[in-house]
Amino acid sequence: MPHTKTPQGFYKPLAIGAPEPYRQPPVALERMIHFVPPHIEKIRSKIPDMISQVDVILGNLEDAIPADEKENARSGFIEIGKNNDFGSTGLWTRVNCLNSPWFLDDVTEIVASIGNKLNVIMLPKVEGPWDIHYLDQLLAQLEAKHSIKKPIQIHAILETAEGMNNVEDIARASPRMHGMSLGPADLAASRGMKTTRVGGGHPFYGVLEDAEGDKPRTLFQQDLWHYTIAKMVDACMGNGIKAFYGPFGDFSDGDACRSQFRNAFLQGCVGTWSLHPSQIKLAKEVFSPEKEEVLFAKRILEAMPDGTGAVMLDGKMQDDATWKQAKVIVDLAKIVAEKDPDLAAAYEM
Ligand code: GLV
Ligand code: MG
Image (cartoon, rainbow, N blue to C red; front, side):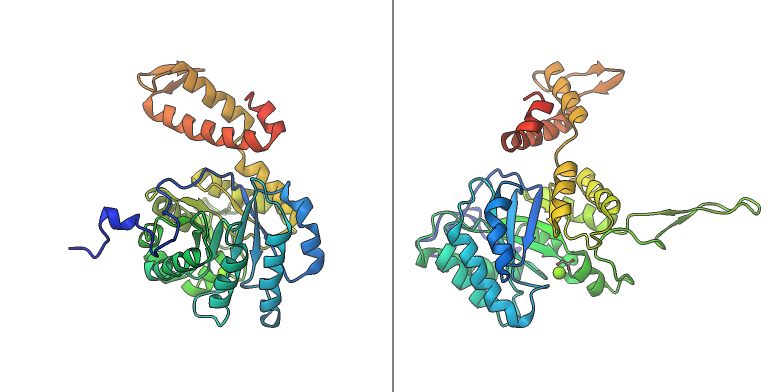
């Protein structure tokens, strides 16, 4: 017998008094998870303006926060949570990793003070389902203690070779799982990949065209992250949770960033991280479906009201499967339209 919980047990609160786990995760538009360093006062003062411009604000406590600012980042994040009204914009934090000296206080202090406003905890360097189980239990105890009304969800970063091996078990470890992001920097290090870049392509990773006499041969660059993203998307979508691209480190190269975001979007990711204000616009552009695609998808749905049979539209065959493809795009367009009046008009919604 596999060591899994009973179906009933899976949805039982893990502590007496903790909220019921979600059976269906809440619907939320999360095209970009915008990272902010909460120890910096100037950044904290910009949060009220930022709320209307992004889908998710994430207070980063982990990597990129200096060791001697870890406590200030935590208290700065709590201040951000207390002093702002987030409306439909998500409030997330990335806590320090499980074996760090900061993790326990990050989680306990944040849940105690702003647990009713916090939507998601991003957990870095997840190696296997045991990491999720630990945070799951701890959160249930804290939710019970502090009378938290809704379950705080967990979002794993996929950034170790061991985590890759266990990606499916991580995705289904708990009803608290929100989704997963690719962490290309840590993952590259953990796997021994020979790149110093944070996400994106590499000029040496490609396929050389066949030799033809002395003709110069072109190297066609390939997406270094193709396999990883595809595996992550299958693990997530196969378990009813969402997949995200992660950081793109070269802020000076918007075109490369857009192209990496787009590959992830086309493969099934629903959003990305934005680490710099310029990436917010790129993420919005890429992770909102294209106007022409939405209008065409709407025509498919209209042409096949019950989703069965086959029709031709502009010379292209449509059937039950393309109806489902169209529905993915139209469903996404609907939640984008709710947040964005310009796109609502473009999508004719
Ligand atoms: C993100 O945390 C990464 O390591 O790429
Ligand atoms: Mg990392």
